[in-house]
Image 1 (cartoon, helix red, strand yellow):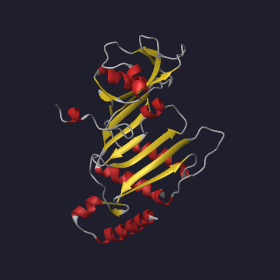
Image 2: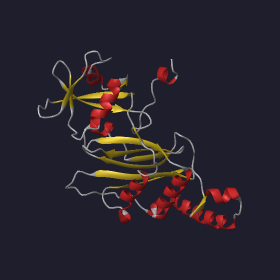
Image 3: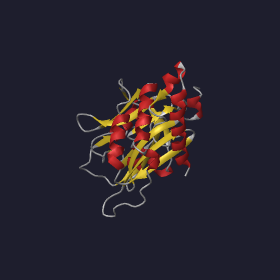
Image 4: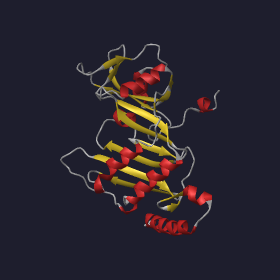
Length: 265
């Protein structure tokens, strides 16, 4: 398998580091020797993800991977506030922190782990995964339950601590979609404004995403993070919807902003 080659490279780098004596060598050398990663802000270096395999489309679109590290040091992770609602935080990790983090993942045996191909049928399966991009190779391990030495939880904790100066993510734009649901009078609700640029019925009928900007986009984002996952959005007709927002740079597989937005026109 290709990832076995990475282990060989790591051994070679350790030997090379033992013979290096330059200042640059010392600066870029960790416990595993000389290695580097792509500094591209669009390249995911590490992602820890978790998603149920049986859930509604709005929930899956709204959910954010528990922690993602990009090549330029940007790190985004999820946590819970004092009221039990989800918060998405963002920060910057230093080269030293990233190097130590990657070394920790590798030292735990990441490149020796295998996918877990079966899950317990009596439970709703949740697929957890760890992805690492190193040496121009993207390697992902997916498991439903057991991780060696509880490594998923420990790596996630380290990922969430990569930055000392996190800020709260409050997007003002994103791709919005809507899904009709039966009205639930016991569920939390909020009213879709009549002056919105489109109706939820339009979205649900077209089964397409629409780009939304401004405070309404932020409201959709915040409501998707509520402690209760059954929030419904009501139109003036009385119809109920579940609404999702997908934000480039934060959500999984998000489309880029419309061309006119990206160009600033």
